[in-house]
Image 1 (cartoon, one colour):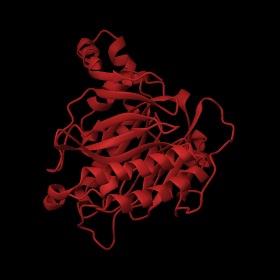
Image 2 (cartoon, one colour; image 1 turned 60 degrees about the vertical axis):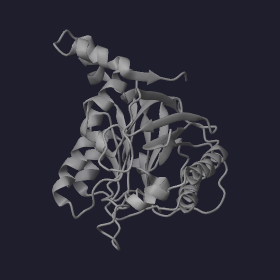
Image 3 (cartoon, one colour; image 1 turned 90 degrees about the vertical axis):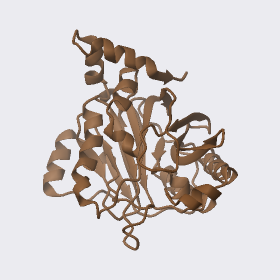
Length: 320
């Protein structure tokens, strides 16, 4: 199903030539889909943002996530991103985290990893993990072939249950493209994207579970910030947020939707609605992610140059 656009949006998108490249898939597939063999230009990448509600039970969430992986395979995606803490429905209940079993989370992750490997997908999965008895709100980043690139732990927290991440900012190669990663409240701290972009990231994958529609005063900023992170670095940004839940508008495990894929020039290629559970997808041209603005900050002789060059040393790179 093609994305429904207003006349003004259609004219704007048509001028960039990307109307036909964006699609919205509203329902998950439940049948096995073979790995795509479609040929694609080396500069192109199929990316998706999966906007779904999940559950406190990791096993139940993993089953739903895998159903949407099937949909992603049908859409011939290379990379799919899920919302923040999708493995546990972003529950913030204190008693839940006192009793949470790390083994259940690992088992759920393995189910998703196995499905991703079988379907030939790279996955950015919102989850939680434990280190030395401490829990972290994290992303498990899995490349095609089922290879785990690593975990990024949320740096700036907006919830009480996890500990903040303190490791170097990752730039990992995902589906052949250098990528960086942030979670929800991290979006308010531009350096978390700027430094990886200086170091080579051409795509930022952003998983979130932001405040719901009842926090109406936050919505303008929520839309503006991911657009800013893309355009101020000349990179793509793929955002997967949880939708609003009409049956529980005050619940922790729901948000306000508006998952989106953003062009390096700041134009929104695809954007979901508030309530729909859907898969937003687009074919992007990696050559457009020039990182021009990010690179300018360390190329030109300004008062910020040395500071940003030093900051870029906080980035961890993998070997593609």
